[in-house]
Amino acid sequence: MLDHSLTSNHAVIILASGLSQRLGQAKQLLSKEGEALIRVMLKLAVTTQPQAIILIIPGHHHTIMDAVADLAAQYPIIQMVVNPQPETGMAHSLYLGIEALGDTNVPVERVLIMGIDQILLDESHLTALLAGEPSVVASGYHSWAHTDKRHLDDDALINPSVKTIAGLPLVIDEGLLKQWKSALTGDKGLRHFIRALPPSQISTVTNIQLNYDIDTPEQLAYAQQKGWLD
Image 1 (cartoon, rainbow, N blue to C red):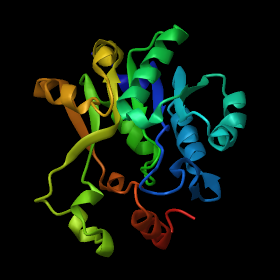
Image 2: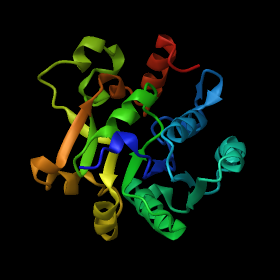
Image 3: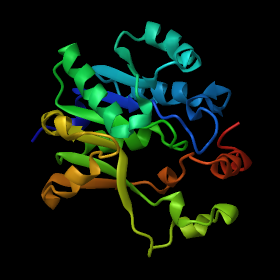
Image 4: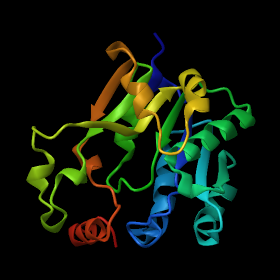
């Protein structure tokens, strides 16, 4: 069987067109160590040595585009795709990403799909995902939704009674992704299709640091208190 850890025959789709309505400000532009979060994640994607990176951003938000324009110029593999209807949900962003990837005519076997607000995501986790063998290699973690937002408690996040999420970032066979493309609408994302796969086609790489994403002002304040964001 192909040893994925020794190849870079993959592409990356970064879903970064969310409107951050609950947060009240563009999460793409939150600052981590003096750099916009969208830049941090884009650089992280580059470290995986992909054949192509498709970055989905919202329309009519030139500040976000400007934040990564120099990286797009520096790395020809980066293609920015504007989602003109970001309010329709993540699935539409993914649809646009798959379509754009197909238009590049770059032959890849697998696709790494990332968001941009898992603030403790690192290169080693992405490497572990890409080293997996099954059709889908997802990230395993819990959700902040299971904690009291007023009293965020690290211990609560690793409570074994809390169901583990299998979610982004994840690596998926390119053929499978293309097969599911036409059914991606609104918020109907990949999870429904992934759950229908036989267990032999799915694996997870557990990383409790991925519990922490940023959707609300309380979560942002907590991340800043911890020093994870500026």
